[in-house]
Amino acid sequence: MADYKSIQLTNFEVDKKVLDIVNNCLSQQPDPRPFVEINSIGYVFYFHTLDIKLLQRNIEMLTAHDLFSANNPSSSRKAGELLQKIYEEVSKIGSYGIRSGKRQYVNFDIERKVRNRKAKEQNRSQYYYAQDNNFSKISNQLPPEMTNQIFCGDSLEVLKKIPDNSIDLIFTSPPYNFGLEYERQDDAHKWDLYFEKLFAIFDECIRVLKFGGRIAVNIQPLFSDYIPSHHLISNFFISRRMIWKGEILWEKNNYNCKYTAWGSWKSPSNPYLKYTWEFIEIFAKGTLKKSGDPKNADITSDEFKEWVVAKWSIAPERKMKEFGHPAMFPEKLAERVIKLFSFVGDIVLDPFNGVGTTTAVAQKLGRKFIGIDISQEYCDIAQKRLKNTLL
Ligand SMILES: C[S@@+](CC[C@H](N)C(=O)[O-])C[C@H]1O[C@@H](n2cnc3c(N)ncnc32)[C@H](O)[C@@H]1O
Image (cartoon, rainbow, N blue to C red):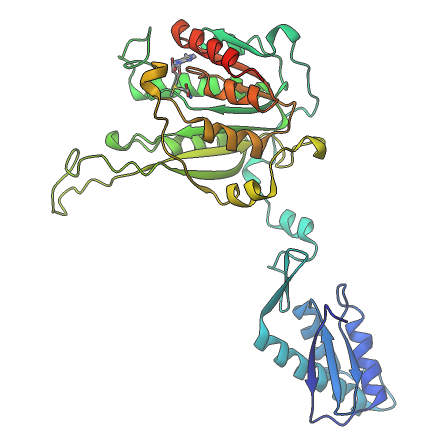
């Protein structure tokens, strides 16, 4: 009885027949089932969760017809009145309590996610945009000679050598452009060419992911050019029937950009909005649920509680000069993504591996890995990093 809430209902003349009718109606309720008892003051209603719509139907039925008690019409009417009182009292409460880590709702109805969640989600066409995909559920083995390797080359070419459905997690941060700060590229790409190339690489990424595999893309939206790259990239994955798993806001707290760099000062003419954060857009292939042995989940409960809150305050990488790369993400970011979205022993890929933050962290955390970068210099540093981080 400890888990039940009770409401004392006075001003009712108690009647065993009425009690039976009411309890008969309540027996159709979901577990743990509510019920009514009689005590010295009157009726007591005990309840835990309640399907309010069902209760309303019972009330309508009892007050409209005397179905339960043809010989004594007033018993069913009285039962209807008692249920009506119960309904009114419960409606005042709304929700209450936490039990086994879950909030238990009174007053939940078809919209609340307590009963028949799966069926309801199907009714609502959960991630409808990703339903009619052709993703195979069969995983393939990554050849041993490709496992735990850094490859130097254009991702579009290198990825083609990786079998379909062989990678568990991709974590990456694409180049802002395929040029400028990075080596070996010219800076002449226009944005359409940029996205064309990026999406061709992402198509390969989707192909190599296992069913249930995830891709997490760290994106600094190109605000100064007014290019909402996080939206464009998300739209691309949605167009490919990938399921949007979520978005993490990576708060870098770097308040160093100038107020008027790209806009007006103290004027509505063209104020420029400043951002101190980046995004990580996460997409899943085929299903949100990834298979894996629970023994291979290495995230602690404290980490889990903190990291599922999708705003991560992590300082930017401070050793970029030391590593000789202008656009690294910090190890802490890779650690969170890898532990939250993959199991120990999974295969992690970064198609824009730079100086190997993803691969170094994957190795530290007991994952297998593949890193690809077009720059030989960066690949050499990524290799050295792996040696330094060997356990
Ligand atoms: C934003 S950086 C990634 C940095 C990385 N996260 C790190 O922490 O070192 C993007 C990388 O993409 C690489 N890149 C650019 N075009 C490429 C391509 N076509 N194939 C593979 N890598 C490419 C660049 O050399 C650069 O290192």
